Amino acid sequence: MGSEFSLAAHYAIGRVSGMFDATIWDENSSWFVLGLLVCGPLGLIGAAARRRGPWGLAIRMIVPVGAFLEPIVLGMFTPPRLLPWPDRFSSVACGVILIIAGVIGGLAVVGADRRAHGKSSTTSP
Image (cartoon, rainbow, N blue to C red; front, side):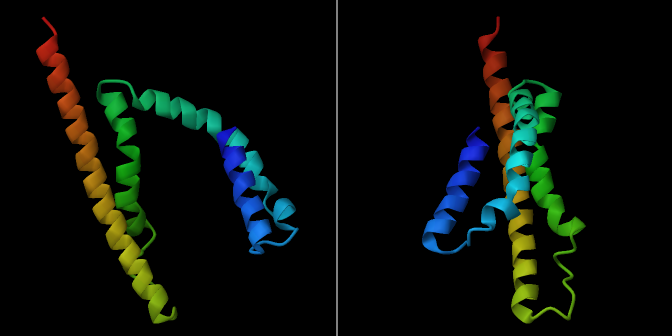
């Protein structure tokens, strides 16, 4: 239900601020449906990410690996020349930021996993 509340708040604030017109609710109703459908599986993935061992680590690495791969898969470093230079620049800049975030996130996940294993091995008999 948190996703539904977030969407409603987003569109309501947009309406109040004048950013969106009255058709925003109908035009984006698919996001409310998608929010209902995706929240359950995402909750299960979040619960699985708390598991110890290789499966939990693999699930925790999904976001950093995705951040690292997104600019490569989407071709962010080779934007089409027909785009204006600000669009080309922002594509490359976003790609660099995603690569850096992916590497830092991956290192943080692996580091946290190692610290957790170090603590569990020192506390067990």
